[in-house]
Image (tube, rainbow, N blue to C red; front, side, top):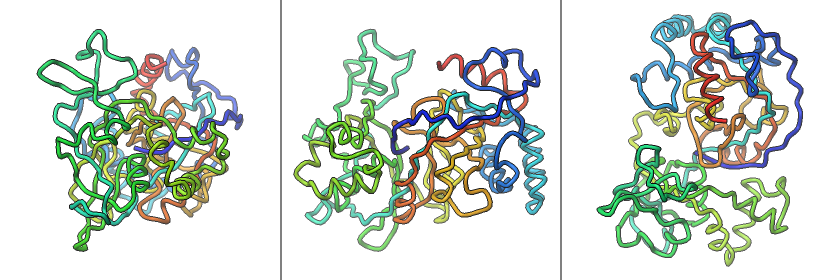
Length: 394
């Protein structure tokens, strides 16, 4: 769940592909083209063992009818487990991907940003030191689907609330700031700074250090369904700075320098997020993403699941983001796993890279705003399903 950025339509020049005839639909598909692994610059230098480990998380999931997922088959998971059992065999991990997946490169140049899990001081009690609340999900919150959408439902509202009178819209951020939900006592935890609370909404999760020294993790539980708007973009449109100046750190600096203008700017993003407390089983695990799995720093990618279903590897190449994602032998290209989503992540070749937890991760995440090439690795047996999905989403 996560940040936003401006799509820069800069051609990065993918090499022309040679179609292998894997799918009859390939040649007519306007969204992706089949390429070979040898055409993927940086592929041979990636840490395929780390990528395989991140992929294997999906093999532990029960089968689901959730159309956001394209889960690996039992046979594919068996082959992945065998490749992973030879942990030091980097060649074996690489061969697993090359033998079991078809690389499909998006024709459109993509764009990546970064997001992180903040670590903040917090309290379970409201006080002058902890005035900014994160709210739990209200009763009756539901996603709007074709099955439950009323005839007169506003097209821009993705969620609503079941009431005795039927589905009703939830208040937007401005109305909630004015107390629209105050009587429901939804306060889950309190932070020191409204700016921190707003950024937790953008990131979708946080590690909180409570007053007694214990640690609490909160994660996404739902949203009002109003459209997400980037307040950095609002400031750019108002002439308050350029996109390069108003990165995450630049936006925070502007908000800190203009306390009397904070609330008005926050209201421009009508989307509002609700949270739940998440049990911390392993302190080394990342936050829980939209796929209900712990995120992996540098390997988890938030996507628009209408185009890239959860569970698929995505090979991302960008000249800019490498130094920010992680050190290693493949600084400008790596295989990530689609396992999260966010209100600001819309479109076929849009990604948000999870870079870790804490202040340093936040600094790194704020600097990632780069054009990127994206190649989705689709299981051999699922190419037709994936192509059909792309056509349906467009």
